Image (cartoon, rainbow, N blue to C red; front, side, top):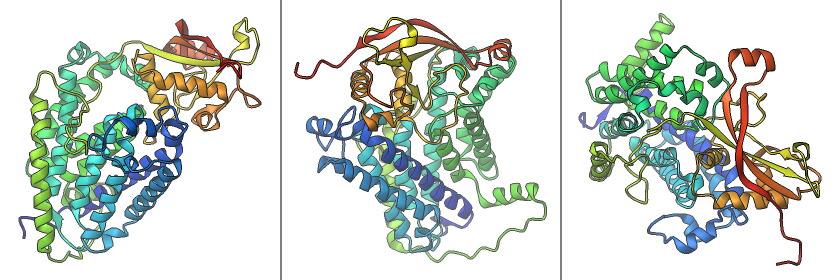
Length: 485
């Protein structure tokens, strides 16, 4: 069975299993904190209404059988506990079927959440986590050699992720082809972080180098993942370094972190020991305990699953070659073997929706209105953007799309109603409630043009942002008086 299993990727298997499990833990924790307010029984887009019109075959989910906020919390807590056990390495110490069962439970639980999550779960990294969780399930335990077919398919996943993102950029906005995309990206990305202001003010030749480096990484390195060692490890290392730069300069939920974890499928133990020796000279390689023989049932199962995944690969492979390439698309309701890609175009100006409320019966000036602060969105120009990734602030991300002119605005209309009602669950999604004593009598939404302050403006005003009002999205609205229906 030497062709099937290898002892050269034991560290990679540990990183893949524990890393993907750690991201599942973050994802389930995010669902526990945000799902009821966004999609629960009194949420902005209630699950019950969705499952009433979308059949199980189109969106397989446990919640088609029954939904309640309590059941959602039970699923989320189960996911957190199973993920934590894998991070600690407990299932991996047992037979090969034990980590498989643990990951398949995570897969089923999170698929159930994603498939009823509607617009709040429509991001590419949701499908990426679901797919990665399913594939990693078949890496086995420490009792068996690391299965080579699974490692190769994980490399194919990284290939689709990186090469798909590279092609969507080349086929997308001109700014990627003329190397100017990073003149704007750090400022206009969905959720800047504390380093974004400084990255934005780097020299323009550095920004052009960022774009050129991105093209080299995303269009060249994925092919080298299938090269012999140590070339494959070097290519994966370059991908990891590029993702770390994105981690440092932005908030993209767990997209960058899961890409880093998955890249380890191409890094063998010898390369990792070599790097460790450079960092800590004289560090001895640990003695290998040596796994046992691979049971026949495990070989048959892994090969059958791999064959099925290869069949499903037809659609995303065709998509990569298509001039009308789809970005972040799933070709089956189980989110297996998807198409990926991000930022085919880069917005050159940043618009933000600012939501305000008032308890004045007849507000006249701006002083009568108080602003609702979001956790991760620019609001007060003097506030430094925060670091939230890999945690996913779903409401804040939807606010970014809203400012871009998203047509899906029903959730926002309900959101304004919840503010007028003083709904506690909704208010907990925000950074603070400007009306702690009682709900506002009216709310409104204005649109502002934001830009990073220059160095001179920053020294003078101490502000990170400069904003200018450009219009009104929603004029002042109030709840109808009680008894008016």
